[in-house]
Length: 161
Image 1 (cartoon, helix red, strand yellow):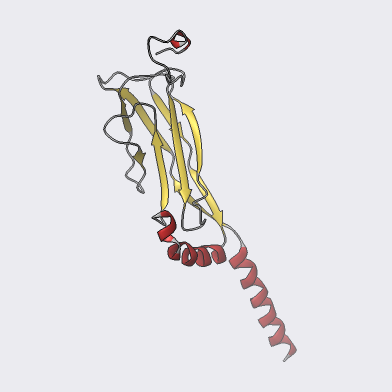
Image 2 (cartoon, one colour; image 1 turned 180 degrees about the vertical axis):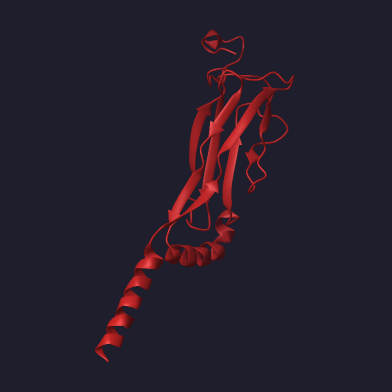
């Protein structure tokens, strides 16, 4: 009788620990983009921003972002984005965030990239494995120096194209 009770307690303890251990999930896979202007010219040293979040695990999405710059050939690479959460959190938060969908309009996993002057769309979104690999912008803006001033401003020379 004591042996079976010990086995039951051990199974319950191991099960409790197992559901509390965080499990890693990819939000956005590694993402490489080529940034070109409307003429098809690659944009070197241009700032591109990636945003990502997970509404099923966090009520506010736990959104994060990172700026990176394109290389000499107009390519930018963002690393894989991951989140860690236990089975308990995944179960409980899925219910809570589904009920709260009305507050923020969705409960999915989101990943997007954008740059100043992006053409045709407001941002590029990741949808599983089908991720855009090219971004068109109105013009190449080198060094992330987006112009907030008009061309006739005395300070406009501080901003380069």
